[in-house]
Image 1: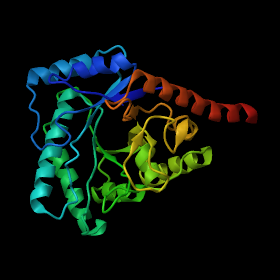
Image 2: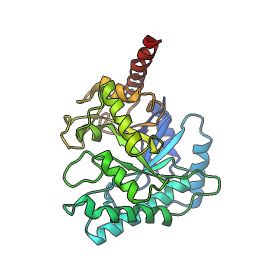
Image 3: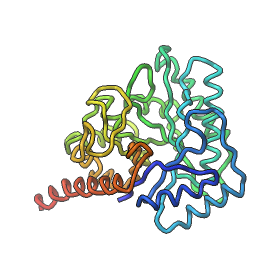
Length: 300
């Protein structure tokens, strides 16, 4: 079990590890700059090295993920917005590599009516340019992939389906530095019902077939205020939304999923995940594992 949470990074980044410990998680996700501003945060080499060392030697926090700013739109037909987005993603990847991050999660953006197929070559160019132009990771530090996150499906958003994400990776020549982050709320809002064992099996099979399970590095663990297929990005605390604990458990306990980092992005009391939310996630995970293990024991 590897339950994580989005936490505040702090000016020196290292406090994010303590924030994770305080609520009982084993992985954290942070913004390395304001999620709603273009201005990047600039960290000294000493700060980045200190975080890298603290993370590598931490007794309980296994992984740190970075989330890129929400303003990024790699699919935009507006050249100025596209270039600003590329610069922001490249900078975030440079920081993620220097931190020893397990991945940089990004929302691809919206084609804004231009059409996914029309904008696909531009999206691929952006990913490849960011991967090639970002500062390299320090010697001995594992590669930090870009993790494409699925979306809730509103408007012209890109990545609303696994087919979209597969097309983006294929357009990049299957670059091994690209991976996947699945958000449970976004998946539900886009119309994919994974709330039963059959649904979870179907999801795992589609990821394996279209993208490859080896590219799935983490998922965002959120219940949904939006009904199935509602196409709105509205997170809820576990068992306070439309998916429910049992619906999340079916996916969390799947043998192909149960050991992945599961990052809570729930609202809590309004300030993000709490220790009680982590306990709820752990209970859902245990319930999910029992669903599959009970079946296995019966077959024996």
